[in-house]
Image (spheres, rainbow, N blue to C red):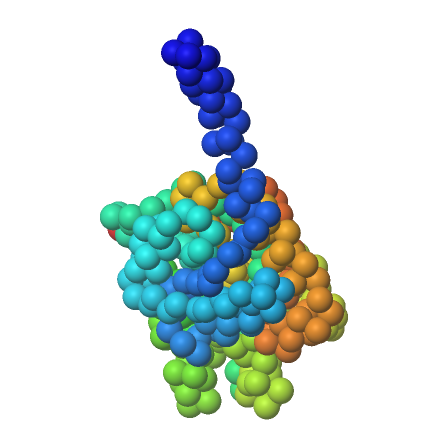
Length: 326
């Protein structure tokens, strides 16, 4: 009897690794079995929050489970990263990461609790907000080459709205100034509305902001679009040149990616990634995002990881050039 018990125990011990390995896969098949929350590091109403709520609503319908958005603003995104990173790695918490979480934030904050690119698990790419270079109509330029010619005639006289220090808007403005090779004064604003006040008042001549943030001003004629910082011309704005047509390789955009906390099982990550892609491929959602000025480019988790690495490589010389400090 004792020998039989010993033999049974040995067999169970041999099967234990297989049972442990199969557990995440079984968990993924029934995922999600309860509510899911998506943490976003901005306040309600901000562009990332709006995007996050659209995704949460669609995933909730797809899963038949409640998906709620939890706003964790502050610290340039560090508070949201900490909250997501400390969450259980079981798929019950996801994180909507912003481009700045991977590009500028690690350079500005020495004590970040997590390295989002290395420790968080990539799920999928949600969308992007291309950066646009616009000018006051009173400046008298209609294209980027015309701006370059004017800037060289008036070195140090033009003022360029550049967003908050360390933001993607700031980095894009710095890259533009460096590419033109002429001094322009960068003026930092917390948002486009404040910058537009000074543009209308004639104190600022140029602005760098997302296409979505300037769409109303363009329609209203208070901003003249010069170029968009995308690889190719936008399908819905084919008349608008790219910055890369003048400065090859110049691409700048704010973007959103869905991530999972560190140590989230790969099976669960794949399930969320597949479901996210299914949601993003819905024609109605594509149009909704386009209406919000968000351009979609679905990616798998592996494709997203590669994209993040390429973005970090792209911005490293710009950050080094302006000397962002922690």
